[in-house]
Image (tube, rainbow, N blue to C red):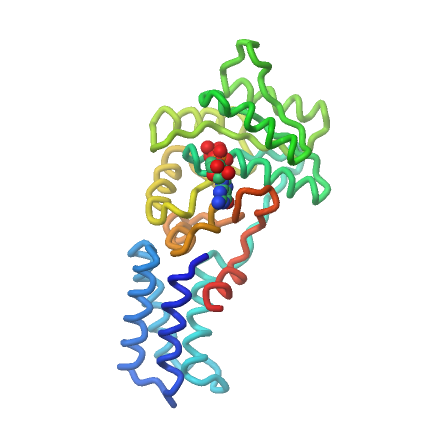
Length: 298
Ligand code: GDP
């Protein structure tokens, strides 16, 4: 994860190690290197610019502790700024005052939504909740069955239209699922919606209609981190078409660069809430900006 950026930054910092103090020229050279490192990591340009400007300003000011040598000072500033760009604090789920809490997942097909639905449900179940998964992706032929398999593995209930029941309306399914959750005393409903391979107005409209029908407490945008800056473009399209409260990054295990993770918060203004790091249901956790920053600077 993020090997390229890690290696690059390590070499930037090691070149500062022999310096007794940093001149303006040193700071300029260092921030230039950081800029290149971020661009190579596929971080979106506005994010790179904001990041580098902050680092430069802080490195020039004498705000950092005198107890640190110049290399340590720069590492500390970069660490702080990475935490900031990744969102600062961990953003937790906002539970509804009156259950069930409704969480809706949106994103492109193949982003890892269905897998994520199972991971999130298992994670919540292990925290003492009683989640129910809802199959509102009625477009892809195997989507309902796939969610049922995931639900079984996660040991959580799945609400889906009976095969051949003629119920083909994802909005109706989503709406009915809330009543069913109340009846069966599930405190959380996780709605898996349809995705397409590319951004598509019809898909956006369906997701927006489901959102309007069930008024979710959280809309989570699920995105494959491996697509780099395309993740940012997709996020902007979903922000306009559906709107969302938080981001889930999937396939971080395969993301050597980190561009999506480092850009999406700044560009959309929405926090990264969860990270998925593999195909197994256990490969999942809340997203912690500070831990992610330390990993990058490790
Ligand atoms: P959906 O179309 O958005 O519902 O995506 P799926 O949940 O079907 O996932 C698409 C593919 O990505 C599947 O082969 C998953 O096993 C895989 N996948 C999902 N999440 C991860 C992850 O975090 N890491 C890796 N390596 N693969 C993942």
